[in-house]
Length: 246
Image (cartoon, rainbow, N blue to C red; front, side, top):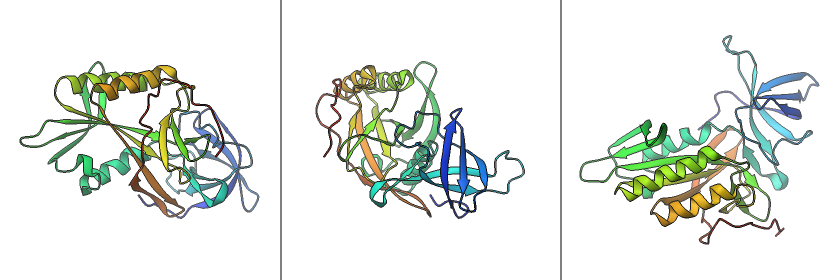
């Protein structure tokens, strides 16, 4: 997924009201940018961070810049657009780049199911059980090379896992796909200390037959693309993961 216009560097002043960020451009100009992420963004919104903004000249938009990337230690990057994973997964499904979910003739986004829920993608094809696919954006890292989810309590996320478990118990395929939007992680686990209820729901769903998938991303100032799969911690997740370095 390439950015529509070249990104410009800036220094983050503050992120506030979830969807707003004040920043200073390289010429010293102070601007306010749209922050396309309603989450806590733990570890990604420290004042003074070097960030990358996408300018626009759309008269319908109130803000002339959108926050896209934040620079990490060691030359790594993190994508902060929480809407991007679904678009990347849609592209990958259409192109057959997710082997576990390849071979379906129909890919329908945002389909109603369960109790007042919508599945991100419903896959179907002749002679095959329907596959319900939920996508989650991941950009938390606290220790070593572990990507973790979630970065805050998410009752909605736990509900999605319960809905997927029910789907699996009824004979359909159910898959939870975590997309890691940072380049300094090589494996994935649940942040059970942040949201024990979500971690317990994950264990329950995996035991019920929900397929757990995780993919990394390649991130540059030109764009973000889906990369190779990342291994998921095979052990129980409903326990505290001590934050250790290394």
